[in-house]
Length: 132
Picture 1 (cartoon, rainbow, N blue to C red):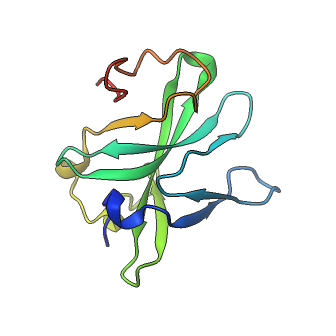
Picture 2: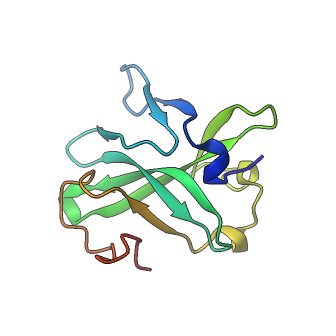
């Protein structure tokens, strides 16, 4: 399994964020925005893991609190080549990434300008990567 952005780019994954509503299809490396509710917006982005691996991701952002980063889902390839996603809160988050805790944390994230509709003080204005 791999979470390398080059291997997941362009692959689709369905994610259900709202109970009772159909899943949303996200494309790894895409430029999508989903307003889940008044507090949570999900956008495509990238994460740079502690070991330097860059992965396609979904970033959960609270636009009502200066861009608070609430969650991360990382796209990865299954052994058969299919694409899937694992979320940071999942019990076995590291397993499908094929990484250790030290290889993943701390990670940085970024999203395309314009996807988040608030001033995000967590982002470096020059590079677009999160500041930790």
